[in-house]
Length: 142
Length: 104
Image 1 (cartoon, rainbow over the protein chains, first blue to last red):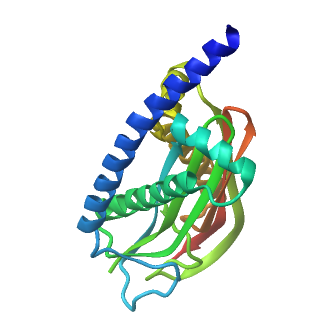
Image 2: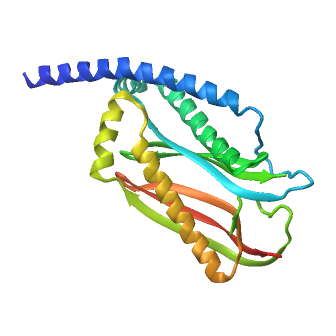
């Protein structure tokens, strides 16, 4: 009886995760594409080469903590059993990286940046909190 | 206080080095954030409560690093880097470090 209830709970959570999770992921990707289009003219580089005239420089950073929905986590666990690519986590990390980078760029634009140099990204797995992607760089005003 | 991640201050000359300055803090989640995050783990996506937690933790670590730099008489910190780790389930440490300098 206990086992039956557990199975039913897993199925319900899985369905909720599948329906709402897929919808949210689609909406998030649309939002990301829209924001990326608006910010295309801000140059972001990973190296440290400076233009000749720089008026001001300041550190800029953006971060996001994400987690997969129940259904994807379940599927991921099952796939992990057999090994190979976990595409559900790949798309989660892609979203998180783009979101963190967008936040850094938007903050830099609000500050009045012309370019961002020394762009770096760091990912940390936080136990029971989620996965954090942190992107930072130095924004410069020419 | 100028803060950069590169090893120079564009447009300025560094006239003195004060060495490495660091700041760190450990923060844990609390019940309010925890409940919504539990729900979000079912539908997935961003865990806003934890994003804010990490932002506040990072800002506090940076403030402590800046305070150390100011105490030494610096007016800028260059080469800033961060290290994040979970030191206990539900708690995260952010460690910020850089080189304190004075520019003329």
